Amino acid sequence: MKIAIVNPSMHEIAALKQVLASQCQLVWTAQSATEAVAKYLQTLPDLILVDAQLSAATTEQILKQAACSILITTTDLREHISAVYAAIEQGAIDVVDISGLSGDRAETTELLAKISRIGKRLISAHRSSSSYSRTVQKDGLIPLIAIGSSTGGPKALATILAELPTNFRAAIVIVQHVDAHFSVGFAEWLSQQTRLPVKIATAGARPERGTVLVAGTNDHLYLKSDLTLDYTPHPIEYAYRPSVDVFFKSLAQHWSRQGTAILLTGMGRDGAQGLQALRQQNWQTIAQSQESCVVYGMPKAAVELNAAIDVLSPTAIATNLSTLRFT
Image (cartoon, rainbow, N blue to C red):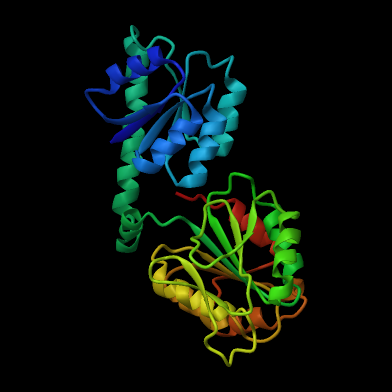
């Protein structure tokens, strides 16, 4: 298993390196969160040992970039208990006391045992994954939430996004039927409803973990084969612009990691066929419930096609997303 160490103390780094040398591959060490993120983007470890003094900030910064198991180390659990809990809230998986690491065989054994258990979990997850999931490991695709909406969509979107935490580990891309003249204002308004950053999706951009991207032109947003976003005027005849169907179908074609697709309130049928295509690719698909819709057109069309696995209100959708465990 490939391991990295983030610790401000060179003494503790040396002690950890000595213990890990016989059983693990140490890929890099860092003494700050900034240094850790820079090195993480160059060499991806399976597990990072993060000192409790740096834990929350480092955990948050790393998990914004990509998925990784993080084990918190501390020489004084009582003193650092608040930092440890904060890191666990951000996504760290456990904590281990290393105060007597250099001379205490019991603490050395505890550290190696926890690393061993984490390694077994990782191996088990890989073995139980589908062939598609193995492609995800190769391609490094992040978790993705795709949302399509129209009439009544802004309120539903605000309800959903308001409940998501700052350390939400999936990328979100939204296609809302809105004229290009109002797209920037819509994105600015949406950013006031959520703790997550909201940006207009630009040509050449990629979905970003923990960031909301919003379609921003009267052309159709779509995902290209190189996994970057772009806009196209085709199909010209589509009345709803940007089209949810065009975006969802491009995801079904090119985004090999199964994600979550949501079709919210709106007039017409845009998005129903795209949601069906994503369900056929084993995505989690959700349509907004009739009683919570301003216009029960797009979700109704999806339900009629049996494209939605779940039919939920915006509040229930928010709860569903908040409880997902992303890797």
